[in-house]
Image (tube, rainbow, N blue to C red; front, side):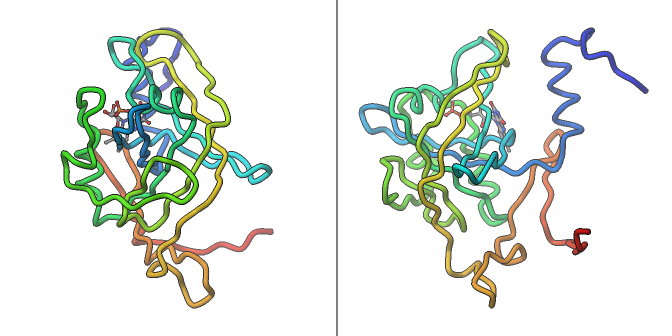
Amino acid sequence: MEIDFAGLKAREAYAWMIATILPRPVAWVATVSPDGKTNLAPFSFFQGVTANPPTLMFVPVNTREGAKKDTVRNIEATGEFVVNLVPFVLVEAMSATSASLPYGESEFEKFGIAAAPSTTVRPPRVAAAPVAFECKLDRIVTIGEGPLAANVVFGKILRVHVADAVLGADGKPDAGKMDLIARLGGDGYARTTERFELERP
Ligand SMILES: Cc1cc2nc3c(=O)[nH]c(=O)nc-3n(C[C@H](O)[C@H](O)[C@H](O)COP(=O)(O)O)c2cc1C
């Protein structure tokens, strides 16, 4: 089959994209409001961008009502965020934090998620996350307007925390020990329990 995206409503295009672009890593993003209230939410439109300078991106889209999500509001106001990676043991806590809470209500507090202080930015990190990137806002690029329009957040990576427990004998992060989850279509998730290696030419 072929689908002409020009004939699709935004919600239909979204459904096809999330059912096909997979597996997607999940950025579990911590921010603070200007008056210091913490916020935590997952985003699976997420990737590294370049190492020169070290940069990552994730994409909070506007709500169905066309409003900016709390994460975007906080980053616009403070210019800082932390991207935590999500291991299988935290998948239910991560999913809980996708609930839409009133602005200023903390997912860390509501769902009992332990936070640890960051070193160079105000938002805390998720204490049990195996990897957490402290980031400073580079820029936000908007694509589209209104409901589901994108706020592409680019962040400069200032520092990474890596749990000693996920390091392999070579001192590098071990994918098996990290046990990160990835988003599939619908309510689906994948684990990186089946892996293989392939040498590059
Ligand atoms: C696994 C997962 C991935 C998600 N990915 C995205 C995403 O890429 N972009 C987005 O706008 N919302 C995504 N969501 C929904 C947001 O997490 C949700 O709208 C959340 O309430 C936003 O929180 P905030 O208003 O505190 O920023 C995802 C939810 C889950 C569970």
